Amino acid sequence: MGVRIHVGAAPEPFRGSARYVDAARASVLPVDLVIDDTAAPDLLRIIAADTGAPPAAGAAAEGEALAERANEGAAASEARQEEQQDARQEGGQETVAPDAPLPPAPGNALAEWPLASIRRLRDQADPSMLALKPEGPDRLERLYIDDAETMRRLLVRCPAPERAERPARRGRILLWAIAAVASVALILFVLVPSMADRLATLLPPEGERALGDATLEQIRDALSDDPLAPVAFCSTPEGDAALRALAERLTDGLALDQPLRLHVLDDPMVNAFALPGGIVVFFRGMIDAAEDPGEIAAVMAHELGHVISRDPARHALRSAGSIGVLGLLLGDFAGGAVVLLLAEQLISATYSQEAERAADAFGLARMEAAGLDTEQMARMFERLQAEEAEMAGSDGAEGADGAGQRGAGILRYFLSHPQTAERIASVRAATAQSGGAAVPALEPAQWQALKSICGPSGAETGAVTGADQEKG
Image (cartoon, rainbow, N blue to C red; front, side, top):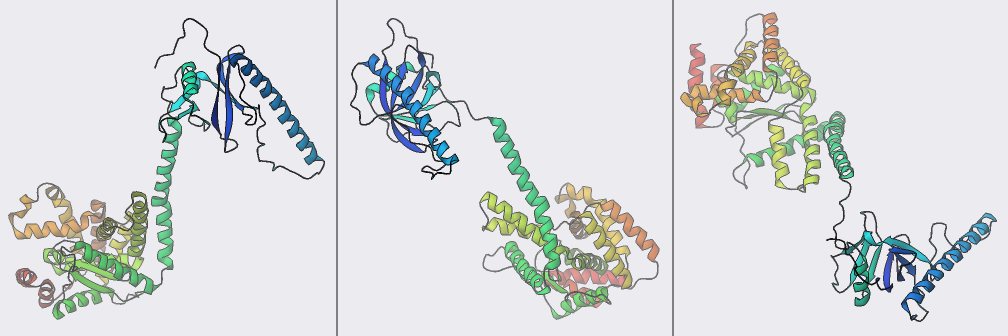
């Protein structure tokens, strides 16, 4: 709104009454409002009212009397404060708390507001009441006026009562936002991993097994299309025996903190992962996609490396901590989205490059110690490198034949493990140094039993690959 310009006679001398919210005293005080057109025509003086005095007559004379009373009240207040200060210095008994503000004496000037800075507050429960404040985001004082004549005369004197206030300094808000984001990043990427690493070393075996069991159940529930039934385990006596035989060859002579527990989930996902408590889980899709038992041996040996290093416990604690923090921030700390995200994080666990290199080295060493063909791991990485571009394109093009689909599927397992070229070179170098004749990872009958562990689909695939193995 534009500034009001008064033309003609001088404005009517102003005096009125109101209630004043004093931010310093945290109290509501009855006050008199005065504009001295002679000394300070641009200031609204707020003066403590003398509620016991009768209302005066004559606007100009009353304004001068109020100004004189304000000066006298201020002098009296200063004198009382000096007397109390002298009494405290002489060791006398304090009658007023040091931080407690003194009640204003009648006629004491409480504040002076420039008329140009007065702004009207609209968000009031009582629209018949006028609420005013001085301009500024940090100004907490308020004037409440319920007399219609006082409202009219004061608003006429204020140049811009309806003007919107300037927003708070955006730089400070931006700094607080950056600090909040930095704090969350510090928690997620520094504090949570550090605490998870520490807890993983302190977690007793029974606690780690309980964590692994609970996590596996969450994963089974998250992967199931039936909310009442988790994804089933695949199990046959012959298939379980073949899987145990492969694990026994890889762990022969190895000191494990706790027994190795192997599971096959009836799910077409081409994946395998390790969980806390010595759990290694294969998906049916991984076993169906494998073209040789040595590939399953390479995957199992790699996951054993993570189990020995307790990487799954660290990763589970980190994921749970990070997702818990994000859940608290986003408001879903107990919802299903957190469980689903945690399951996805654990299934497609990506560890640090150091952890992956260590797991690769451990897997190669275990395969070599078992007399298995370490070339299987190298060939698997090479197939990944050769077919990554094709997999990144169209999935439909991969469906030309079943073997191509199985080959692409087994490679998806290693897509979450970075630095493929470097790992191929490391595996090749280790394979060249090992030398010696390798023995089959499983006998043909064992391999067919493992391929049939989930039922007829696996049996049909197993019959084909078993025959191919006999031909080789």
